[in-house]
Length: 211
Image 1 (spheres, rainbow, N blue to C red):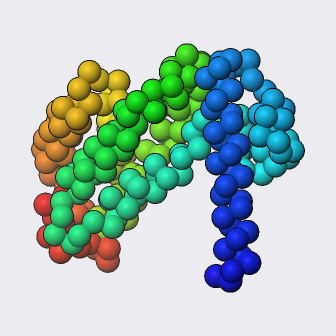
Image 2 (image 1 turned 180 degrees about the vertical axis):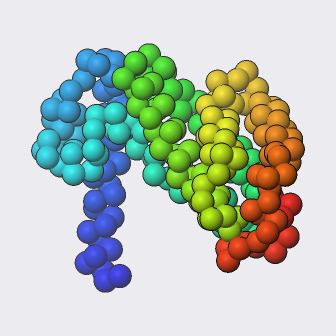
């Protein structure tokens, strides 16, 4: 990467962060529904087109790290060590994400989300997208010929674990409890569901038959 390209990318990232920070401040002060894209653009001193060049929708301004969330789960599923089982790797990543989202600085963001039907709806749609992508990655990593019901179920439970733990009185204890159930269910899935993994495949890692 050239110095010019590096400066351009840093400037782009800084602009994106400025827009997101400005939007969140306005949403906290006035409520999500009371703030428009033009308000955000004016407060951030950018054009409306600049806002949309960084964010596909008003809701995306709040969930600015949506792509990072998904990428981290995918890395946990497919980038783990060859001898590391799948469920503990996913648990570790969800725990790290939950620890980040329950810090005091994040409280206002979640209040804005919880108070807005539009944002709650966006979050649910986002979770479905993440679960679909994660299920496909799990199936591919296990060397399965297609996405199975077990993979889709596991992915949905993992993504939902983040929300359930965030809302719990003791988030870390909630992660432990949820993943204890997830692991028990994954281990006890019917023999037919395990057959594809145990039969192996081009993408299967050493010892992966243990899931």
